[in-house]
Amino acid sequence: MEAQVAQFSFEGYRIASASINIDPSFEKPGALNIGFNVKGLDNSKMKTFLLSIVTEINDEEGKVSCEIKLDGKFKYEGIDDPKVKKSLFETNGPAILFPYIRAYITALTSLSGIPAITLPTINFAKSISVEINTQS
Image 1: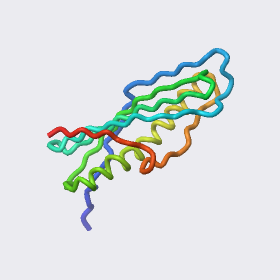
Image 2: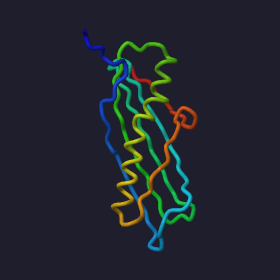
Image 3: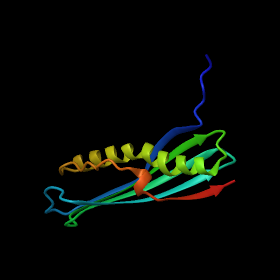
Image 4: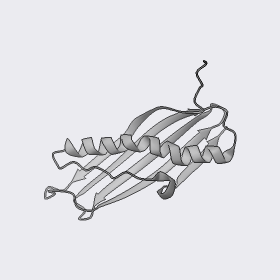
């Protein structure tokens, strides 16, 4: 039996930048405001897709804030249908990368001497808009 090559594969990720600001009076996180800015670059010639997710987290009192930029790289083969690409790039890509963002934020906050912030799981199909640029 011959192994099938995946049409869409995750090649890896990198934390491009990260920052945390903590007010000295901060004790524990309350309600969090979470925002995402998601951009992608489809290089159809190289059959690669680069996805950047900037995640911003602030507590409701403004005493702690984090901003993380994570870049993920994907490869694809034999996917020419724009609807299929759109689905993979806008839904699957962010869903694959989010656990890395989530784990990084938990580690960053817990290693900063404050109670760890653990983000909730997110359904990217319903809540995130991805700006995709194409490069040939």
